[in-house]
Image (cartoon, rainbow, N blue to C red; front, side, top):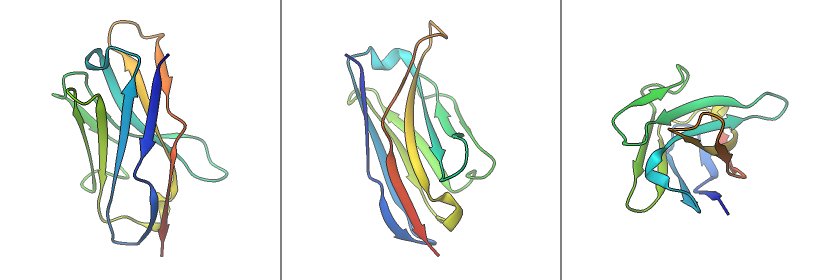
Length: 119
């Protein structure tokens, strides 16, 4: 049974930082590309950042470039999202996603962690 469990969300003031974690189990983690998405109230889920299975390639949404950093530890089956210079508009539920690098139809989602940035 595949599980992705996010943690690290919370309430932070604008300009502050948070570090999200997503721990994966039940899959061959090192063969999955990992990503972070977010969904604010009343909006659709949007892409935030992604990292390749080996960690050598990353991509970011324009809205978070220069402020957020995605990384992974394949020994611990965990992906991280370091969020700095947080803005009120970063408030959302943040979701972790695992995409198989060998089968584009295979993907898993976590249940999310809430990030609230007070202005």
